[in-house]
Length: 574
Image (cartoon, rainbow, N blue to C red; front, side, top):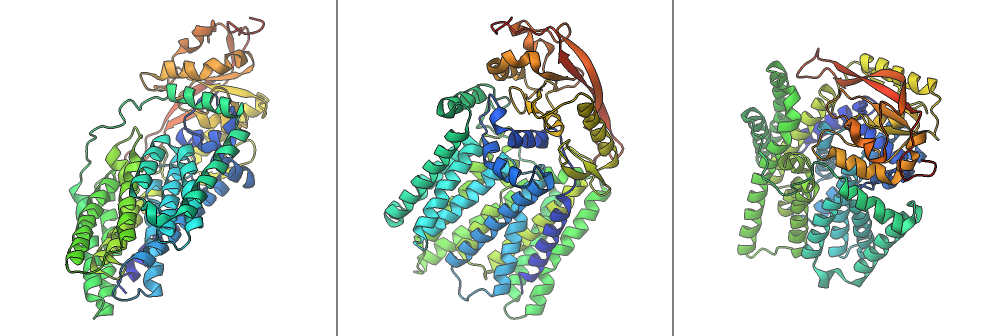
């Protein structure tokens, strides 16, 4: 009974997220994801090879944005449930948890797994792939270390390694080190290790086979991608820890409500269920309060770090109980301890390498700390019930905030059906964004853009336009602007394909803060004003109404340039 209310709250959170999936589209980060996924072989420089992993699923869904989102959602949910079941199987318990408890725990962990959606677009990306890799690695280790399914577990670990390497190399590094250091090698056996090696090798060979230029080409793409990386000068740094007493109070009340429900639920199930329902009540009241004081737009930044604090404190308590149980001569399963260590390390792996706040990024994956707590103390313990209340509250708040303050967009509460790309991808967009998108697509239609058309985006912030037009990106799926090193990085990306400049359209928006400087092509004797002519313009919404500023909308003008006298130096015919 203590898990009934958290399970209900988690179900509500998942319902809100499913409702959100067909809505909204960001042409910056999300546009980059879609361009990279649709055209993984057209990128001349990138260290993030996630496009190759998602491209087959994108093709299967027929290029549907909504279909791809649901596929990513289903994969995360499936791995969250599978890992939760593995944790419940290995966790200690004085009494076997009921099916209702297990079902509710799976719902809670699944809802909490989608915490990143409050800060990121819904379309699966390298971050989604990194999360899947970590969850698959933990599940594989659980199966291999416990000897339940050593070959299957090993294969999962190998697949996880490949997924991590193609998502974020920095995450792959930390994940690999953690698995190597924590694995009980003698217990694991040869079958699991061989299966992991074979799975990793198959994935690597498949990637090399489809990559342009095969091994040599792939190495060159990654090397240039590393050279063109911007905004990642300091991988290890001391970022500010965002604090909010109002958020902490809500989390504390939810955790205390869960603990009280777990403590009283054994003798008084009804009382336990009512106390567990406090999690939902606290979440509802706090959301209304935050909206009244104008905090809704800040919750996605404050909630992950606050949740990290809450689960960190509960984790310390779980470790203390485990140590106390060992001193009381109770047997502690070494596999359980090692798996808990691995789960505890995963948020670090996820955050390492990001140019965002490290605390915030680690907090997005607190689901692994939640599962580590359950693994150490068991699903029927009071501490697990407290963690369940905290997890359900966090998941519900994040889910409700997601459509109210989506990433780089306006509220999704009022949307209209819209065509998102010339190939027919459909989503629901706020009316103003739908009109701007239709105008942008009309420009691509009037210019006769086809799949053979290459486009160089120098706006620094509109990679999604290339995808929406159905064109192919020149140089990189996203030539990122706005950083001190952006100009040099752009030159690195363009250098291998400079001889194709005479056939590529250019998107130009010099007034945008993130625009690539005009002199980017001067290295090859090309001038944007003298060697091109403007053939079209269209508006680009750069700032949509948000929870912080419901009336604020900012637009910029994107100019389409067509080559006229472009003759890059060092190219045939120049």
